[in-house]
Length: 457
Image 1 (tube, rainbow, N blue to C red):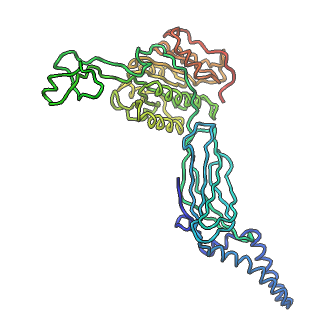
Image 2 (image 1 turned 180 degrees about the vertical axis):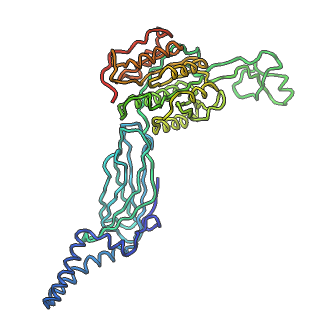
Image 3 (image 1 turned 30 degrees about the vertical axis):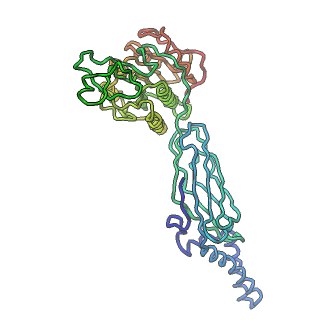
Protein backbone atom coordinates (compact mmCIF):
# COMPACT_ATOMS: atom_id res chain seq x y z
CA UNK A 1 0.00 0.00 0.00
CA UNK A 2 1.20 3.49 -0.78
CA UNK A 3 -0.05 6.70 0.68
CA UNK A 4 0.35 10.43 0.48
CA UNK A 5 -1.62 13.66 0.63
CA UNK A 6 -2.15 16.61 -1.66
CA UNK A 7 -0.96 18.95 1.06
CA UNK A 8 2.41 17.21 1.11
CA UNK A 9 5.25 18.76 -0.89
CA UNK A 10 4.83 16.17 -3.68
CA UNK A 11 1.10 16.85 -3.86
CA UNK A 12 1.10 20.65 -3.57
CA UNK A 13 -0.33 22.79 -6.33
CA UNK A 14 2.59 24.03 -8.41
CA UNK A 15 2.82 27.55 -9.68
CA UNK A 16 0.96 29.35 -6.88
CA UNK A 17 -1.78 31.77 -7.97
CA UNK A 18 -0.66 31.50 -11.58
CA UNK A 19 -1.15 27.76 -11.42
CA UNK A 20 -4.59 28.27 -9.89
CA UNK A 21 -5.61 30.67 -12.68
CA UNK A 22 -4.34 28.08 -15.15
CA UNK A 23 -6.93 25.69 -13.72
CA UNK A 24 -9.85 27.70 -15.09
CA UNK A 25 -12.16 25.49 -17.10
CA UNK A 26 -13.71 26.42 -20.43
CA UNK A 27 -16.77 27.61 -18.54
CA UNK A 28 -14.67 29.73 -16.21
CA UNK A 29 -12.70 31.29 -19.05
CA UNK A 30 -15.90 32.01 -20.91
CA UNK A 31 -17.45 33.75 -17.89
CA UNK A 32 -14.29 35.78 -17.39
CA UNK A 33 -14.11 36.81 -21.05
CA UNK A 34 -17.81 37.67 -21.14
CA UNK A 35 -17.48 39.76 -18.00
CA UNK A 36 -14.49 41.70 -19.34
CA UNK A 37 -16.26 42.27 -22.68
CA UNK A 38 -19.45 43.42 -20.94
CA UNK A 39 -17.50 45.79 -18.69
CA UNK A 40 -15.69 47.23 -21.73
CA UNK A 41 -18.93 47.75 -23.61
CA UNK A 42 -20.54 49.32 -20.55
CA UNK A 43 -17.69 51.79 -20.27
CA UNK A 44 -17.93 52.75 -23.94
CA UNK A 45 -21.73 52.97 -23.96
CA UNK A 46 -22.06 54.45 -20.48
CA UNK A 47 -24.39 51.70 -19.25
CA UNK A 48 -24.05 51.26 -15.48
CA UNK A 49 -26.31 48.20 -15.32
CA UNK A 50 -24.28 46.43 -17.98
CA UNK A 51 -21.13 47.25 -16.00
CA UNK A 52 -22.57 45.55 -12.92
CA UNK A 53 -23.41 42.45 -14.96
CA UNK A 54 -19.90 42.41 -16.45
CA UNK A 55 -18.24 42.72 -13.05
CA UNK A 56 -20.40 39.91 -11.70
CA UNK A 57 -19.54 37.63 -14.61
CA UNK A 58 -15.82 38.36 -14.28
CA UNK A 59 -15.76 38.06 -10.48
CA UNK A 60 -17.51 34.67 -10.25
CA UNK A 61 -14.69 32.55 -11.75
CA UNK A 62 -12.05 34.55 -9.82
CA UNK A 63 -13.87 33.96 -6.55
CA UNK A 64 -14.09 30.24 -7.35
CA UNK A 65 -10.33 30.16 -8.03
CA UNK A 66 -9.59 31.92 -4.73
CA UNK A 67 -11.88 29.66 -2.70
CA UNK A 68 -10.56 26.49 -4.31
CA UNK A 69 -6.94 27.58 -3.95
CA UNK A 70 -7.34 28.39 -0.26
CA UNK A 71 -9.12 25.14 0.55
CA UNK A 72 -7.37 23.55 3.55
CA UNK A 73 -8.94 20.14 3.83
CA UNK A 74 -6.52 17.24 3.55
CA UNK A 75 -7.14 14.10 1.55
CA UNK A 76 -4.94 11.01 1.72
CA UNK A 77 -4.82 8.34 -0.94
CA UNK A 78 -3.55 4.79 -1.16
CA UNK A 79 -3.31 2.11 -3.83
CA UNK A 80 -3.49 -1.64 -3.36
CA UNK A 81 -2.44 -4.05 -6.12
CA UNK A 82 -3.50 -7.70 -5.98
CA UNK A 83 -1.67 -9.70 -7.13
CA UNK A 84 1.55 -7.91 -7.99
CA UNK A 85 2.69 -10.71 -10.30
CA UNK A 86 0.27 -12.12 -12.89
CA UNK A 87 0.69 -14.31 -15.99
CA UNK A 88 0.19 -12.71 -19.39
CA UNK A 89 -3.50 -12.50 -20.20
CA UNK A 90 -4.61 -12.59 -16.54
CA UNK A 91 -6.16 -9.69 -14.66
CA UNK A 92 -4.98 -7.84 -11.58
CA UNK A 93 -7.21 -5.72 -9.35
CA UNK A 94 -6.21 -2.21 -8.28
CA UNK A 95 -7.96 -0.73 -5.24
CA UNK A 96 -7.89 3.03 -4.71
CA UNK A 97 -8.82 4.40 -1.30
CA UNK A 98 -9.36 8.08 -0.54
CA UNK A 99 -9.87 9.45 2.97
CA UNK A 100 -10.78 12.97 4.08
CA UNK A 101 -8.69 13.60 7.20
CA UNK A 102 -9.67 17.27 7.61
CA UNK A 103 -12.58 18.84 9.48
CA UNK A 104 -14.26 20.16 6.34
CA UNK A 105 -16.27 18.23 3.75
CA UNK A 106 -14.79 18.07 0.30
CA UNK A 107 -16.37 19.22 -2.91
CA UNK A 108 -16.51 17.25 -6.11
CA UNK A 109 -13.38 15.10 -6.59
CA UNK A 110 -12.16 13.26 -9.67
CA UNK A 111 -9.56 10.49 -9.35
CA UNK A 112 -7.33 9.54 -12.23
CA UNK A 113 -4.63 6.87 -12.15
CA UNK A 114 -1.89 6.76 -14.75
CA UNK A 115 -1.40 3.32 -16.31
CA UNK A 116 0.53 2.27 -19.46
CA UNK A 117 -1.67 1.96 -22.52
CA UNK A 118 -0.98 -1.80 -22.81
CA UNK A 119 -2.85 -2.31 -19.52
CA UNK A 120 -6.04 -0.69 -20.75
CA UNK A 121 -7.70 2.74 -20.71
CA UNK A 122 -6.80 5.29 -18.07
CA UNK A 123 -9.26 4.87 -15.16
CA UNK A 124 -11.22 7.90 -13.97
CA UNK A 125 -13.66 8.12 -11.06
CA UNK A 126 -15.89 10.94 -9.81
CA UNK A 127 -16.43 11.21 -6.05
CA UNK A 128 -19.17 13.42 -4.68
CA UNK A 129 -18.98 15.15 -1.31
CA UNK A 130 -16.79 13.30 1.22
CA UNK A 131 -17.67 14.05 4.83
CA UNK A 132 -14.96 14.78 7.43
CA UNK A 133 -13.26 11.51 8.32
CA UNK A 134 -15.09 9.79 5.46
CA UNK A 135 -13.55 7.18 3.19
CA UNK A 136 -14.27 6.17 -0.38
CA UNK A 137 -12.99 3.09 -2.21
CA UNK A 138 -13.02 2.42 -5.95
CA UNK A 139 -11.35 -0.29 -7.96
CA UNK A 140 -10.45 -1.17 -11.52
CA UNK A 141 -8.76 -4.05 -13.32
CA UNK A 142 -5.70 -4.14 -15.54
CA UNK A 143 -4.68 -6.81 -18.03
CA UNK A 144 -1.86 -7.28 -20.51
CA UNK A 145 -1.11 -9.91 -23.12
CA UNK A 146 2.49 -8.74 -23.20
CA UNK A 147 4.90 -9.77 -20.47
CA UNK A 148 6.88 -7.02 -18.81
CA UNK A 149 7.10 -4.73 -15.80
CA UNK A 150 4.63 -1.84 -15.81
CA UNK A 151 4.47 1.17 -13.45
CA UNK A 152 1.14 2.27 -12.01
CA UNK A 153 0.85 5.89 -10.96
CA UNK A 154 1.03 8.58 -9.99
CA UNK A 155 -2.51 8.94 -8.71
CA UNK A 156 -3.99 12.34 -9.51
CA UNK A 157 -6.76 14.10 -7.61
CA UNK A 158 -8.71 16.78 -9.41
CA UNK A 159 -10.58 19.32 -7.28
CA UNK A 160 -13.51 21.26 -8.69
CA UNK A 161 -15.73 24.04 -7.40
CA UNK A 162 -19.55 23.60 -7.32
CA UNK A 163 -20.00 25.83 -10.40
CA UNK A 164 -17.40 24.05 -12.51
CA UNK A 165 -15.40 27.22 -13.03
CA UNK A 166 -12.03 25.91 -11.89
CA UNK A 167 -10.24 22.57 -11.57
CA UNK A 168 -6.97 21.99 -9.75
CA UNK A 169 -4.92 18.82 -10.12
CA UNK A 170 -2.82 17.47 -7.28
CA UNK A 171 -0.61 14.42 -7.66
CA UNK A 172 0.56 11.81 -5.21
CA UNK A 173 4.17 10.75 -5.51
CA UNK A 174 3.96 6.98 -4.97
CA UNK A 175 4.13 4.34 -7.68
CA UNK A 176 3.39 0.62 -7.81
CA UNK A 177 4.75 -1.95 -10.24
CA UNK A 178 2.81 -4.74 -11.91
CA UNK A 179 4.92 -7.63 -13.20
CA UNK A 180 3.39 -9.62 -16.05
CA UNK A 181 5.21 -12.96 -16.24
CA UNK A 182 5.11 -15.37 -19.21
CA UNK A 183 2.26 -17.84 -19.46
CA UNK A 184 3.10 -21.22 -17.97
CA UNK A 185 1.73 -24.57 -19.07
CA UNK A 186 1.32 -27.49 -16.65
CA UNK A 187 3.59 -30.36 -17.69
CA UNK A 188 2.95 -34.08 -17.16
CA UNK A 189 5.11 -35.77 -14.47
CA UNK A 190 7.01 -38.02 -16.86
CA UNK A 191 10.63 -39.19 -16.75
CA UNK A 192 12.72 -37.71 -19.52
CA UNK A 193 14.87 -39.86 -21.75
CA UNK A 194 18.33 -40.35 -20.25
CA UNK A 195 17.30 -39.05 -16.84
CA UNK A 196 19.29 -40.68 -14.05
CA UNK A 197 17.46 -42.86 -11.49
CA UNK A 198 16.22 -40.95 -8.48
CA UNK A 199 15.70 -37.67 -10.29
CA UNK A 200 11.94 -38.06 -10.17
CA UNK A 201 12.09 -37.91 -6.40
CA UNK A 202 14.23 -34.85 -6.55
CA UNK A 203 17.11 -36.43 -4.59
CA UNK A 204 20.17 -38.61 -4.96
CA UNK A 205 21.97 -40.20 -2.06
CA UNK A 206 25.65 -41.03 -1.85
CA UNK A 207 27.08 -43.19 0.90
CA UNK A 208 29.76 -41.74 3.09
CA UNK A 209 33.16 -43.38 3.31
CA UNK A 210 32.87 -46.67 5.15
CA UNK A 211 36.04 -46.27 7.18
CA UNK A 212 35.59 -45.50 10.88
CA UNK A 213 37.97 -42.57 10.65
CA UNK A 214 35.93 -41.03 7.83
CA UNK A 215 32.66 -40.85 9.77
CA UNK A 216 31.33 -37.30 10.10
CA UNK A 217 29.15 -37.23 13.24
CA UNK A 218 26.42 -34.77 14.05
CA UNK A 219 24.29 -34.02 17.08
CA UNK A 220 21.46 -36.38 17.90
CA UNK A 221 18.03 -35.20 16.80
CA UNK A 222 14.70 -36.49 17.96
CA UNK A 223 13.69 -39.44 15.80
CA UNK A 224 17.22 -40.58 14.86
CA UNK A 225 17.82 -44.33 14.91
CA UNK A 226 19.74 -45.27 18.06
CA UNK A 227 21.69 -47.81 16.03
CA UNK A 228 23.42 -44.85 14.35
CA UNK A 229 24.85 -43.51 17.63
CA UNK A 230 28.60 -43.02 17.32
CA UNK A 231 29.87 -43.78 20.81
CA UNK A 232 33.45 -42.61 20.30
CA UNK A 233 32.28 -39.11 19.26
CA UNK A 234 29.70 -39.16 22.04
CA UNK A 235 32.46 -39.73 24.60
CA UNK A 236 34.63 -37.05 23.01
CA UNK A 237 32.00 -34.29 22.82
CA UNK A 238 30.04 -35.18 25.92
CA UNK A 239 26.70 -35.32 24.08
CA UNK A 240 24.90 -37.91 22.03
CA UNK A 241 26.27 -38.00 18.46
CA UNK A 242 25.08 -40.04 15.47
CA UNK A 243 26.80 -41.16 12.26
CA UNK A 244 26.00 -39.21 9.13
CA UNK A 245 25.90 -42.23 6.88
CA UNK A 246 23.93 -40.65 4.05
CA UNK A 247 24.57 -37.31 2.47
CA UNK A 248 21.62 -36.20 0.38
CA UNK A 249 22.37 -34.51 -2.91
CA UNK A 250 19.50 -32.77 -4.57
CA UNK A 251 19.06 -33.43 -8.27
CA UNK A 252 19.92 -30.34 -10.29
CA UNK A 253 18.43 -28.94 -13.45
CA UNK A 254 19.64 -26.10 -15.65
CA UNK A 255 17.12 -24.40 -17.93
CA UNK A 256 18.95 -22.77 -20.84
CA UNK A 257 17.17 -20.07 -22.84
CA UNK A 258 18.65 -18.98 -26.14
CA UNK A 259 17.89 -15.27 -26.61
CA UNK A 260 20.04 -14.55 -29.67
CA UNK A 261 18.27 -12.23 -32.05
CA UNK A 262 19.72 -14.10 -35.04
CA UNK A 263 18.21 -17.36 -33.81
CA UNK A 264 14.57 -16.28 -34.01
CA UNK A 265 12.40 -14.82 -36.73
CA UNK A 266 9.55 -12.38 -36.15
CA UNK A 267 8.20 -10.78 -33.01
CA UNK A 268 5.04 -10.21 -31.01
CA UNK A 269 3.15 -12.23 -28.41
CA UNK A 270 2.71 -15.21 -30.79
CA UNK A 271 6.31 -15.33 -32.00
CA UNK A 272 8.74 -18.22 -31.67
CA UNK A 273 10.81 -16.30 -29.12
CA UNK A 274 7.80 -15.73 -26.88
CA UNK A 275 7.03 -19.46 -27.08
CA UNK A 276 10.56 -20.22 -25.93
CA UNK A 277 10.30 -17.78 -23.00
CA UNK A 278 6.95 -19.26 -21.97
CA UNK A 279 8.41 -22.76 -22.28
CA UNK A 280 11.36 -21.89 -20.06
CA UNK A 281 9.00 -20.48 -17.43
CA UNK A 282 6.89 -23.65 -17.55
CA UNK A 283 9.92 -25.91 -17.13
CA UNK A 284 11.32 -23.85 -14.24
CA UNK A 285 8.01 -24.09 -12.38
CA UNK A 286 7.57 -27.79 -13.15
CA UNK A 287 11.06 -28.87 -12.10
CA UNK A 288 10.85 -26.98 -8.82
CA UNK A 289 7.56 -28.73 -8.09
CA UNK A 290 9.27 -32.06 -8.75
CA UNK A 291 11.94 -31.33 -6.14
CA UNK A 292 14.83 -30.29 -8.35
CA UNK A 293 17.36 -27.59 -7.57
CA UNK A 294 16.91 -25.30 -10.57
CA UNK A 295 18.77 -22.43 -12.16
CA UNK A 296 18.05 -20.32 -15.23
CA UNK A 297 20.81 -19.67 -17.76
CA UNK A 298 20.80 -17.55 -20.93
CA UNK A 299 23.19 -17.44 -23.87
CA UNK A 300 24.72 -14.27 -22.38
CA UNK A 301 26.03 -16.30 -19.42
CA UNK A 302 23.53 -14.66 -17.06
CA UNK A 303 22.31 -17.05 -14.36
CA UNK A 304 19.57 -16.90 -11.77
CA UNK A 305 19.24 -17.03 -8.84
CA UNK A 306 23.04 -17.25 -8.26
CA UNK A 307 26.20 -16.52 -10.17
CA UNK A 308 26.93 -20.17 -10.83
CA UNK A 309 30.60 -19.73 -10.01
CA UNK A 310 30.95 -23.13 -8.36
CA UNK A 311 29.82 -26.60 -9.40
CA UNK A 312 26.90 -26.55 -6.97
CA UNK A 313 26.18 -22.82 -6.82
CA UNK A 314 23.56 -20.82 -8.59
CA UNK A 315 20.70 -23.26 -7.97
CA UNK A 316 17.51 -22.71 -6.02
CA UNK A 317 16.21 -25.72 -4.12
CA UNK A 318 12.84 -26.58 -2.70
CA UNK A 319 11.65 -25.42 0.69
CA UNK A 320 11.52 -21.83 1.87
CA UNK A 321 13.78 -20.59 -0.93
CA UNK A 322 11.81 -22.22 -3.74
CA UNK A 323 9.04 -19.61 -3.91
CA UNK A 324 11.49 -16.70 -3.80
CA UNK A 325 13.76 -18.34 -6.35
CA UNK A 326 10.90 -19.15 -8.69
CA UNK A 327 9.60 -15.59 -8.40
CA UNK A 328 13.08 -14.24 -9.14
CA UNK A 329 13.43 -16.36 -12.29
CA UNK A 330 9.91 -15.59 -13.49
CA UNK A 331 10.53 -11.89 -12.93
CA UNK A 332 13.67 -12.15 -15.05
CA UNK A 333 11.75 -13.97 -17.80
CA UNK A 334 9.13 -11.22 -17.69
CA UNK A 335 11.63 -8.68 -19.00
CA UNK A 336 14.09 -10.81 -20.99
CA UNK A 337 14.77 -9.50 -24.50
CA UNK A 338 16.71 -10.63 -27.53
CA UNK A 339 20.46 -10.40 -27.09
CA UNK A 340 23.14 -9.45 -29.58
CA UNK A 341 25.22 -12.56 -28.89
CA UNK A 342 26.57 -14.39 -31.94
CA UNK A 343 27.24 -17.77 -30.31
CA UNK A 344 26.72 -19.84 -27.16
CA UNK A 345 30.27 -19.60 -25.81
CA UNK A 346 29.32 -17.76 -22.62
CA UNK A 347 26.65 -20.26 -21.68
CA UNK A 348 29.06 -23.07 -22.52
CA UNK A 349 31.61 -21.60 -20.12
CA UNK A 350 29.08 -21.50 -17.27
CA UNK A 351 28.09 -25.12 -17.87
CA UNK A 352 31.74 -26.18 -18.06
CA UNK A 353 32.26 -24.76 -14.55
CA UNK A 354 29.37 -26.75 -13.13
CA UNK A 355 26.90 -28.29 -15.52
CA UNK A 356 26.19 -31.65 -13.94
CA UNK A 357 22.58 -32.71 -13.79
CA UNK A 358 19.71 -32.34 -16.21
CA UNK A 359 19.95 -29.73 -18.97
CA UNK A 360 16.81 -28.51 -20.73
CA UNK A 361 17.39 -25.98 -23.50
CA UNK A 362 15.21 -23.84 -25.73
CA UNK A 363 17.23 -23.05 -28.85
CA UNK A 364 16.72 -20.84 -31.83
CA UNK A 365 18.33 -21.56 -35.17
CA UNK A 366 21.88 -22.94 -34.73
CA UNK A 367 24.55 -22.98 -37.40
CA UNK A 368 27.34 -25.54 -37.46
CA UNK A 369 29.61 -23.60 -35.10
CA UNK A 370 26.84 -22.99 -32.57
CA UNK A 371 25.77 -26.64 -32.75
CA UNK A 372 29.37 -27.58 -31.90
CA UNK A 373 29.14 -25.42 -28.76
CA UNK A 374 25.87 -27.15 -27.86
CA UNK A 375 27.62 -30.51 -28.29
CA UNK A 376 30.26 -29.48 -25.77
CA UNK A 377 27.52 -28.53 -23.30
CA UNK A 378 26.17 -32.07 -23.51
CA UNK A 379 29.41 -33.64 -22.28
CA UNK A 380 29.04 -32.42 -18.68
CA UNK A 381 25.35 -33.19 -18.20
CA UNK A 382 23.53 -36.32 -17.13
CA UNK A 383 20.78 -35.82 -19.69
CA UNK A 384 20.10 -33.07 -22.20
CA UNK A 385 16.80 -32.20 -23.85
CA UNK A 386 16.49 -29.49 -26.48
CA UNK A 387 13.43 -27.82 -27.97
CA UNK A 388 14.38 -26.11 -31.24
CA UNK A 389 11.99 -23.20 -31.72
CA UNK A 390 13.78 -20.97 -34.23
CA UNK A 391 13.68 -21.21 -38.00
CA UNK A 392 12.49 -19.35 -41.07
CA UNK A 393 8.76 -19.95 -41.68
CA UNK A 394 9.14 -19.37 -45.42
CA UNK A 395 11.11 -22.60 -45.69
CA UNK A 396 8.63 -24.68 -43.72
CA UNK A 397 8.34 -28.33 -44.56
CA UNK A 398 5.98 -31.03 -43.33
CA UNK A 399 4.08 -30.22 -40.17
CA UNK A 400 5.07 -26.55 -40.27
CA UNK A 401 8.67 -27.26 -39.17
CA UNK A 402 11.30 -25.35 -41.11
CA UNK A 403 14.24 -27.02 -42.80
CA UNK A 404 16.62 -25.08 -40.57
CA UNK A 405 14.89 -26.58 -37.52
CA UNK A 406 15.28 -30.07 -38.97
CA UNK A 407 18.95 -29.47 -39.60
CA UNK A 408 19.49 -28.08 -36.08
CA UNK A 409 17.69 -31.08 -34.55
CA UNK A 410 19.86 -33.47 -36.55
CA UNK A 411 23.07 -31.81 -35.35
CA UNK A 412 21.96 -31.88 -31.73
CA UNK A 413 20.90 -35.53 -31.91
CA UNK A 414 24.27 -36.46 -33.33
CA UNK A 415 25.83 -34.75 -30.30
CA UNK A 416 23.77 -36.86 -27.88
CA UNK A 417 20.86 -34.52 -27.22
CA UNK A 418 17.22 -35.54 -27.08
CA UNK A 419 16.16 -32.87 -29.56
CA UNK A 420 12.71 -31.97 -30.84
CA UNK A 421 11.61 -29.42 -33.41
CA UNK A 422 8.77 -27.19 -32.23
CA UNK A 423 6.09 -26.59 -34.89
CA UNK A 424 3.99 -23.40 -34.83
CA UNK A 425 1.21 -23.63 -32.28
CA UNK A 426 2.68 -26.72 -30.59
CA UNK A 427 1.82 -27.61 -26.99
CA UNK A 428 4.80 -27.95 -24.69
CA UNK A 429 2.98 -30.64 -22.73
CA UNK A 430 2.71 -32.83 -25.84
CA UNK A 431 6.37 -32.28 -26.69
CA UNK A 432 7.30 -33.02 -23.07
CA UNK A 433 5.63 -36.43 -23.29
CA UNK A 434 7.33 -37.07 -26.61
CA UNK A 435 10.74 -36.24 -25.14
CA UNK A 436 10.10 -38.85 -22.44
CA UNK A 437 9.72 -41.69 -24.91
CA UNK A 438 12.65 -44.04 -24.93
CA UNK A 439 12.46 -44.30 -28.72
CA UNK A 440 14.06 -40.87 -29.08
CA UNK A 441 17.70 -41.78 -29.33
CA UNK A 442 20.80 -39.95 -30.58
CA UNK A 443 21.25 -40.37 -34.30
CA UNK A 444 17.56 -40.99 -35.01
CA UNK A 445 16.04 -39.08 -37.93
CA UNK A 446 14.96 -35.59 -37.06
CA UNK A 447 11.23 -36.28 -37.11
CA UNK A 448 8.86 -33.39 -37.26
CA UNK A 449 5.79 -33.45 -35.08
CA UNK A 450 2.66 -33.29 -37.20
CA UNK A 451 -0.87 -32.37 -36.36
CA UNK A 452 -0.21 -28.70 -35.69
CA UNK A 453 -1.23 -25.80 -37.83
CA UNK A 454 -0.62 -22.09 -37.89
CA UNK A 455 2.59 -20.10 -38.05
CA UNK A 456 4.84 -17.90 -35.97
CA UNK A 457 4.04 -14.26 -36.36
